[in-house]
Amino acid sequence: MFNTATVGLMILLLLGLWAQSTLVASSAAILLVIRLTRTTFLFPILEHRGVEIGLIFLTMAMLVPFAQGRIQLQEIWENFWTLPGLLAVIGGAVATHLNGRGLRLLADNAHMMVGLLVGSIIGVVVWGGIPVGPLMAAGVTYILLSIIQWLLGLIH
Image (tube, rainbow, N blue to C red):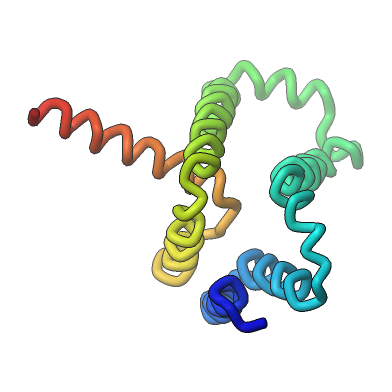
């Protein structure tokens, strides 16, 4: 019952509570409950569809003001052609690209997830950040790894 996975989830739960990161603490707690109640058949579902399900809820949350009529189409159209609006389009495209690279990085290096979570907790505690998700953290990690590989290529 108390193996590496269970202890690891308990450590992540405690770190999440200590850092006041409800996302990390809740995720670790839910996975711990699944593990301890022997409903581990849910793990493959979460692994293959969890990101998609989470992104659906995240996107829905961001669209609520539009759905409630607090944002009108005219406002969107007018804002779209401003410098901040155009930069938002570019930022969205770049972030989406990086999230895709980060997802591939995590698929090939699942062991990096703990480091990303610990880094997110440090970001919350030290800089007061908001841990929006491991995909962006993995995307930033992809950029850092690419820069280091490029620099090492220049040295050799």
